[in-house]
Length: 293
Image 1 (cartoon, rainbow, N blue to C red):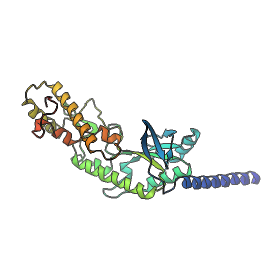
Image 2: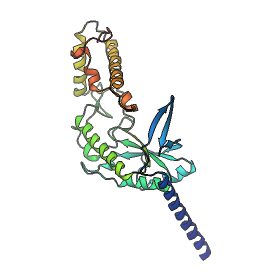
Image 3: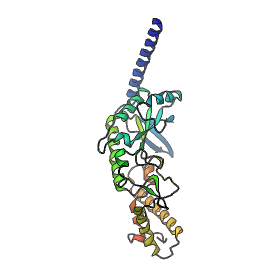
Image 4: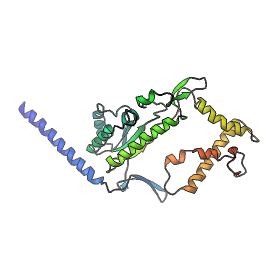
């Protein structure tokens, strides 16, 4: 019995030494002096560079609710069984900012430490205002203020389980929390264990509605329609669809004319307010390409 105990202790010590050596090797390869991870385009070919060298992600994603200390021990054996080199794992707003203005980085630091011990890179998913069209990961202090963090309203007046995009206070609060997360990563992860961060997760709607029918949303939509219907050749839904396509053209022109660095996916898919407001409907733009506004 004593011999078995000694063998077991020896194995545990051996495993600990191996983990320490692996972490040291990983840290040496991921030097603080190495450039940030980036996607490069050369001769029509794209590559993800990590620590200045091409990196092939062999990734695995943990469960949406696995980023808690009690569940993390179940994650790493699965990563090792899959021989994955990258873990995609969420960071919850409710976890990161349990009280308004007070940021708790302990879970993020725990993930960073364990990822380095297991020689894994990380892709963090920010479960902020949205998570799969819902807002279940909002902090409790935000959920308790539906006046500042409202949900969408369906056509029939029902509140649906999706956050409204017409909530300036929610946008500002989310922006502050996400910025705090990125600042912490800059200081706590000089070796770039985190190679990517997803901003929000699957924004959208539930409850059978394709858009928000709240008073704020109706006011914004009505403002455009009121002005557009006064213009010649208004064709109802077709005019609205065409207006969105022209907004995308203005967006493309803005990106091409003002690009000073490589554009991100977020840049390519985001239509800004100015892309809409530059429509002739608002009287701020000269006719373009002879097309109706």
